[in-house]
Image 1 (cartoon, each protein chain N blue to C red):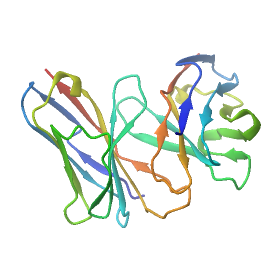
Image 2 (cartoon, rainbow over the protein chains, first blue to last red; image 1 turned 30 degrees about the horizontal axis):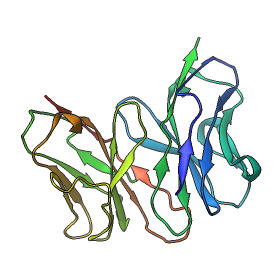
Image 3 (cartoon, each protein chain N blue to C red; image 1 turned 45 degrees about the horizontal axis):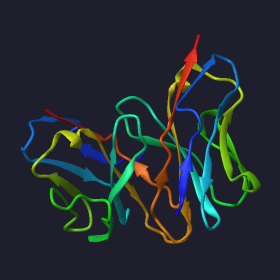
Length: 113
Length: 116
């Protein structure tokens, strides 16, 4: 069964610092992987997705993620944090042939001035 | 840009009352999902529709929850009777429903339910 583990329920960075949010997945077949962002009292917005076309995936708002099969990881990074990046971030996995998304528990990002 | 619409945005109800949530997916999207998100956790799938048919409702508490998508377009999720533990954000999402690809799910703004 597929699952997702997000290490660190809370991450705090200074404005301008590197953002690194960790995601490890468990899947019996090559998966599709997604990162979503959620602002308070809003729905989820897709940041980026891995579809096996390229291991380094670029998304919106300057975020990118690298798929590492050997580490079963799909960590999300951004070189320089902005105050507007403060939100909750969710990693999700979907196995090919299934439409079901399985989400991690989320990481709340705080950006300090 | 097309969006998933949900209403109401907020709902406060008393225990044992009935509540209903409405979702209108992006036009042309065949697949519609209802998720429940408990505070501090990731969304969990309650039910998935392909057109008007239920594909997966394995996590739907069927003794009190029901969902329908009669004409394969908009959908209603109902809880009767509501319990304190049902307090959560209820999210609707839709996708094109193309099988075998990384089909993106687009989420609505959600309905935040508080049961008193």
